[in-house]
Amino acid sequence: MKKLGVQGIRRGKRCWTTVVDDSLYRSTDKVNRQFTATRPDQLWVADITFVATWIGFVYVANIEASVGSIDDVEFAILEWVDWFNNRRLLEPIGNIPPSEFEMAYYRQL
Image 1 (cartoon, helix red, strand yellow):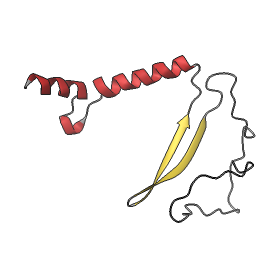
Image 2 (image 1 turned 45 degrees about the vertical axis):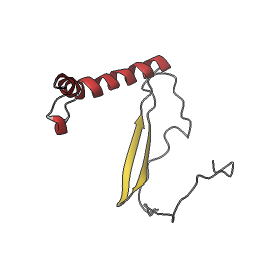
Image 3 (image 1 turned 90 degrees about the horizontal axis):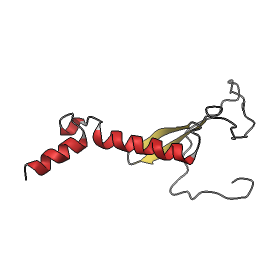
Image 4 (image 1 turned 120 degrees about the vertical axis):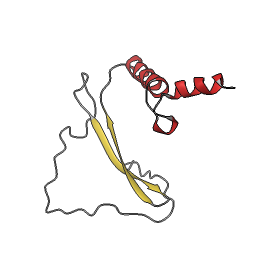
């Protein structure tokens, strides 16, 4: 974006979250900014950023593993949705899966 002279929109004042100390060791760029992989799990990409909230900033880390084809990604998403709706235990509703809570709700109507 910098090379093209493009910037994201900034709302509010600019916030500096990091002060660079040039005397400290920094890891080198192991892939020379070439983010392509020829096989699964050859290259993982991570992005650590911050998100403004009403009371301050929250740091967010996104880590992406190479996953193969789009079918693999779709299947992984479906597995997660199934777990989220049918198998995770949710404390505020009595440590049961949301689908069980929903079925119990409709049974009592």
